[in-house]
Structure formats: C-alpha cells, structure tokens
Amino acid sequence: MCGIFGHVGKIETEKALTCLNTLSHRGPDGAGHYASAGIFLGHRRLSILDLSDNGKQPMSYNDGRYWITFNGEIYNFIELRRELEALGHHFKSESDTEIILASFLEWGPDCLHKFNGMWALAIWDSQEQSLFLSRDRFGKKPLFYTTESEGLSFASEMKALAPLLPSIKENQRIIDDLEHIFYYESTDECLLKGIKRFPAGHYGWYKNGSLTLTRYWNTLDNLIDVPESYEEQVEMFRELFLDAVKIRMRSDVPIGTALSGGLDSSAVFGAISHLSQTGAGARANRDWQHAFSASFPGTPLDEIIWAEKVAKHCGAKITPVTIKPEEHLATFYEDVYRFEDLYITPHIPFAATYGAMKKAGVTVTLDGHGADELFGGYSFDYLHILHDEMFNYNNSKAVIDTYYNSQLTDSQQFGNLPPKGIFWLKQFIKNAGKHFLNYRNTHPDQDHPNFKKMDYFTQKLYISFHQTVLPTLLRNYDRYSMMRGVEIRMPFMDHRLVSLAFSLPWQSKIRNGYTKSIVRDAVTDLIPHDVAYRKTKIGFNAPMVDWFKGPLKVFFTEVMASDEFKHCNLINTEGVKKEVTSIIANPAVTFHDAESAWKKISPYFWEKGFLNRIKK
Image (cartoon, rainbow, N blue to C red; front, side):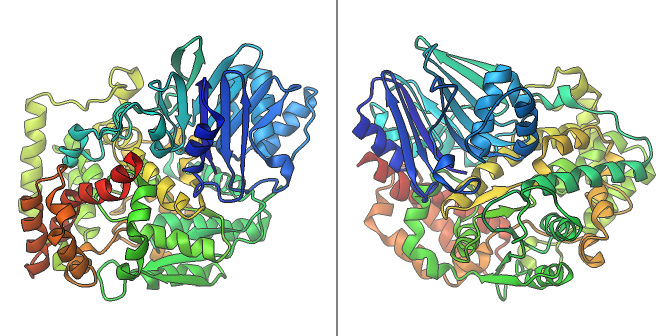
C-alpha cells in the first residue's frame, strides 16, 4: 500500500516531486522516482513486503524496458513466482512488484486475471513509449487521472493532481445532491472538475496522446456452479474464506484487525487465529495477535464487550481505542485534507482506530469489509426479497421476522418499529406497486443475461456491491487507513468469494431468521457462538447524536459563528445553522437526523480543510 503519481509528457521534475509529496502520508517509509524523456513515475513507499532496498519503486525489469509504480498487494505472488520461474524468469527481490512486471512481460494484460489482490498500477514501456494503467477488479485501490496537464497525469489521490490543473473548481453538482452521496464513486465524476476516476476492473493504454480503456473484469462473466445442498455451499464458502484469509496474512510486518465485535470482523479474526494454529503457509505472519476496537462509552454504539469476547476466544488481547472526539480537533482539518471527499459521518473514529494501530507498530490490518454487500447484511437490501416473495406467506414472513429481530430497539436514536402487521402491509403495497408498474433494477450491466437471471434481491446486492454502497466504503477506508500509514486487506473481497456470493440463491443468505447465514454457519466454530449468531448490529459509525449534544457542541457552535462559515458559498449557511442547532437542542433527535445535519455541514469542512488548501 503506497501512493503513486506519474505524468506522460513534459513536466519539470521539481513540480512532479511536489505532486508526489502530497502523498507522503500514504508512503511514510520512503520515496522514489524515475524520470526520462516524456515520462515521470513517482512512488511513496509503505514497506510491507521485502523491506530491503530491493523492494523500492519505481522498479524496472527486462533490462530497463519496463518501469512500474504500484499501489497495493498481490497476495498470490508466491504461487505466481513459482509459475514464472518455471517459465525461465529470474528475480532480484522478494517483492510482489517484480512479479507484476514479469507477469506483464509473460502474459500482457491477461496477467490481471492471474492476480489475487488489490492494485492501482502504471507500467511504462520505454521501447513502445506507452503507458499501461490498471485498477483492481472492484476498485479497492484508488486511481485518478487528468488530461488537462499537457499529457496524462495520474495519482492515488486528487490532491496530487491539483497543482497541474489550469484552475481548481469544485463540482457543485455533487455537493448540491448529497442525498446521493453513494452514487458517484463508481463513476468517473469527482469533486474536483478536470479530474476523472479510473474505473475499477479496467485497464488502459496511453499512447500518442490518447487513452483507451478496456474492461477486463465483469463479475457476471465469472459466476460459478454451486452445490445444490446448503451444507455443501457452506463448506465451499469456508474453504475459500480460509484461503482468502491465509494469503492475506503474508506480510513482513506485524498484522492486526479492526475488531468491532460484529460477525464480519470477528470471522476474519477467528480465521486468523485458526490458521495460525494449523499452519497458514509460506510468508504468513505469526505476529497477528493485535486487535483494536473503537469504544464509545455511554453511547448506543459502544460494542467493546463483544470485541473483548472475540479476542479472548481467539487467545489474543484487545486494545480498546476510546474515542473522545474533542481530542482529535487539533488534526481535524488536516484529516479532512487527507480524506479529500464527502461522507455521511465524521472521519474521527476511523482515523483514531487506525492511528492507534500505527502507534502500536501494526502496519497491516485484515478487516471484514464487503460481507454485508455480498451476503445481505443490510435491512434495506434484504427487504427486497419481498419483491419476488410477497405472495409466498412463509418466505415473506421469514424476511419480516428477520428484519424485526435485527433492528436496534433499545435506543430512541434509532426510532421505533411499527406493529409488524402494519409494516408487512406497507411492504406488500410497496412491492405490489413495483410489480404493477413493471419496475426493474437499473445498472450498466442490466442487459447482461446473468443479471436478468438473478432474483430481485441479488440484483440489489449486485448494485450495492458494484455501484453504490461498497465503492464509497472502499474509498473511505482507503483514506481512513492511509491517513495513518496503515494498509487494509479485505478477505471477503477475494474475487473467488465474490463469484460465489453472486452465484448463490437468496435462501443461502437470509435463512432461519438470520442475515448472512452462510457466513455464520461457516465460522461458528471459529468465534463465540453468541457472536456468530448475534442478530442486532449497527455498522462501525460515529455516535453523532451524542457528539452533537456533548463533546462537539462547542466546536459546532463556534464554527457556525465564524465569518468563514458565514461566507461559505457551497452550502445554505442559514439552513445548515438552523438544522445543526435543532440537533443540539432537540432531546428527541434521531441518529438519522444527526446524520442529515452532518451531511449538510460537511461541505464547509471540506472547503476549509481541502479546497482552500489546494488553491494556495
């Protein structure tokens, strides 16, 4: 995990280094660059594999014909190295970077299909004077580019490209439509005009002033045959999941886990513990017993007792990270600058958790991201089962019961549920209306035969995974962790598990009153039983109601009284002030209300922390 920057065309080395060094937080362990006629490649290093100078980038191969700058990890590099050595390749380093170069030389763009990992990479062919760009299948690693700089420039973050833009202008269309904050990360549209997002699952060639993009991965083309029996499906998932965790334990630095006490992170930590006892294979790190859990004492979001239970079960100690937001105000705007985007909740708890990891000497964390979007962890997703099952009493009852059993009802912040019968009736009317209007899910892949074969619920998961929720979360967690120089690895995002997930019927995901059933049943022996079958869980978030009313009340009040706030042109300042003031004063405010208020005021923080800084 690192930061990369490059430019094809004429650029002064001093200016290129200025761009590169805006990414120093992503790569605090060193910097390197390669400059020649018509090309500049830069790299900020976070050392994880082959900590020696042999692992430094940019790296060359084939007598200097190819040069690479690369951000990410190729987890199956050991297996690929053996295959390449059998084909006659020789290596100077123990890094995965050199494996990418040899693979590219051997197989060209087809090498991407062999990689199990996450990446944003650029390979310069000095002989052909062409640049090859690629981003991993699902966009775990970021890659931005612009052609407004007399050539092509690319980077891991927008801020590295800002110095090359003829002018810096915000994309007001996105800022004005924050209700759709989950809808732009999967597009090429960015918060800064003139910068585009390189698409996930694509590669591109830049030559003679022209960039051509090719899609190399479509999940719908990679579905698999699954066993008919649920028990065999569980076994298939378990085998793939354990292998996904195993290859992600390969590291030359200590690894850990952001452990929330929920199913997903607990499953990952339980698998790490299990594999460490049974032998995780070559290059697996044995220094793994590092669990970190964010704690919000006195709020509905504090789940430290669950995380402690999992850590104890796995034979590890947990490091509680007590989040006191007022203690992070000194770095608030610096972190806004590093985050450089907008979201529905503050960055503070996430940056604090990964900051605690880094302080403890942990550089790599295996986390549970992706499971909800793959296996139906969100109620707003699995309720869509009713679209197909509303006339099936048993199935629709099972879905409604699962929904009611998984909602937090012990806090007024999350609202009260209506009587089950009324809720069921409303859902029936809603779905009957969709049937009557012949409503269909829309997605760029909606005409693919395999998308059409999916049930309505699985189509919704596909959209959530590839287009809306997950791309945004991947963006966020890349920034949260890289603010502190930490790499996140995501076993659930292994492309083999993704192919399995979208090949399964909904009955394997929502079953016997539980969400993500196949995950629970596959890991039940790896984690405490009451964690594996815990029904109520809210995602890792900030307790915004409590913060607005308590430790951040003075901060928000002072912000809204400042001249900078009053002259912010990105938001309706009077409307935002009224809404935030209401959150602070209203004793019956809900979590959704506080979330809405944060969304409304966050463009001001973005302008002050990011936009104004890159304009200087």
